[in-house]
Length: 583
Image 1 (cartoon, rainbow, N blue to C red):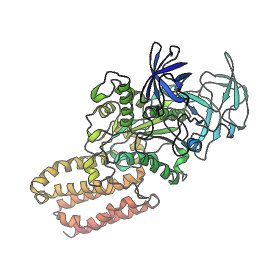
Image 2 (spheres, rainbow, N blue to C red):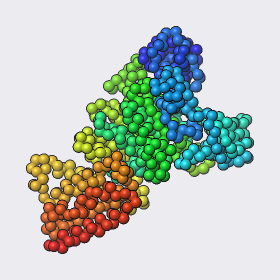
Image 3 (cartoon, rainbow, N blue to C red):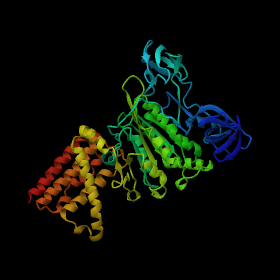
Image 4 (cartoon, rainbow, N blue to C red):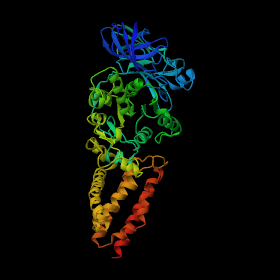
């Protein structure tokens, strides 16, 4: 037991802590505030406290629990809403009201609730760590697998199906060193990644239903992406859209340091939204971690690790998990504050010198892996972090450190946002390093046309950017017929395809097949318009065709009415044939 000798905001220095270890959890003062050791020097320990430290002073006792910061893992996680150190907010509210009282603790999982455990292994089976012992049907979407813990490999000595709490023993293993009793509750350190057999290269995309992302800047399943942008450019809405519609089995959403009303939107929306693939509420595959800007700054730093550890737990069951971190800039600000209070030598703009390595530690826990066990099961974590650079300046340290790690950059543009073009992802500055690697998947699933169509659409958008300089100088009337068609097609790609309404029930999500049909229609109009120019048709006559408006409204065709695209294609062909037949 140690004694407090210094208090500096969320940082406390204690004496008499020579027997402690780095990252041990401690309890501070008579209220037993939760803290974590982040620096040890002889008998002195620097502790970041995850609660308000007002009233703590020199002489107050510090008790080391002897255990690192860990999370509880087991049935009951899905649909949970936690703070940055995995305290369930609904239980905290029941204990202390709308304002979280200091020193309040609550189990992350319900230790009293009974779950129906179905054994899939039997007595006498030889199992390795990671092999399935049985499962719990957590809800209609998630089968929660109970596996052999690390260090408990061996022969199943005892196992039975039945009604159990997470603390009850569901199986006993005969190991080399004795017997291991297995419960459904696991505890895992948050600052150390969970083990796996092998990391694999990503080979297929995580479809998001957002056309600008899936078409031009796809992210691979198991990949990492950053969404940087200035205030008001729509980072949070992009994150919400990905959390709602991404092709992932489980979503872990970490609201790290953002405004409370944004997390309120998530909490209000998700229970009422329906997953397009299953028809069930989205909360049945979601875990939320809320550590908003008005909550303790030190817990903000821990929330990222809490989220990625929960994601790894479900990955180890063979699920594809997506984790959204909104935003890593606020997390980095928490690092900067604690570094300053530790009196460390500051790096660029006051951030600690280890900022880049800490960011890399987080993002590199994503990926597609072969999980532990004797089978050939794979799982993945796709990590997407929002970055909030002050004033939209991407040269600041957090943005630069992030860009050195991630392989997808969805750069949000304030000029697009001011023009009410959402999602405001700038197609001229964004990039995806996964595009070439995923081309085989697109060839197989959407046909060989897709990659050439995508390249052609991007070429047209880039050509439009060059032509805009001429238009600004001498006006659109000075352009030739082909350039006018290019400008018109680019406008159609921008407004009819890339512009997407997150709050429209049909437009909010677009399947890859619908994206293919939409883009094909736009480019088909472009090809036929250029062919018509060769037959001396005036551009004004081409742009006056009635089918143009129908192409512009294709985004509102529901997934159930895809036959409408065939009708528009027939109408497009008929109108151009009639136009050129007049000549």
